Length: 137
Image 1: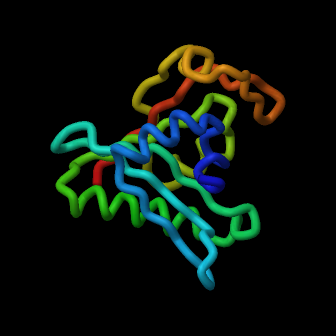
Image 2: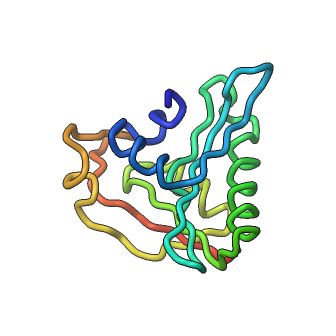
C-alpha cells in the first residue's frame, strides 16, 4: 500500500481498484521496491491503474521494467491496447509514458477535482485533469 500511495494519494481508491485488478510487485531482498496494478475494462482493453517505484530505486530503470512487464502481461491476458492516466501536472510521468510509445488519447477534465477530497499540487501547479494515454500491445 505504501508504494501504491506514492502514485495515488487516495487509499480508498487504491483499495477499490486493487480488489478488482491484478497487482504485481518487484522485491529486493524481501522488501517491496516497485508495484503496478492492471485492470481489465474489456476483452481488448486493460488499464495500467497504478505504477510506483520506491524512492530509493527511482531513476535506475525499474519503472521502465515494470511498465514493459505490464504491457507484456496485458498482451498475454488478451488485451490489444493498454491505457494509463496521469495528472496534467505530472510532467515526468507524461514524458515517461510518451517515451514508452504511449500517445495522448483524451483528457478527462476535472477528474482530480471530482475524485479527490484534497487538492493535489505538482511542479508548481494544481492537478485538475487526467490525461489518458494509450498504446497497442
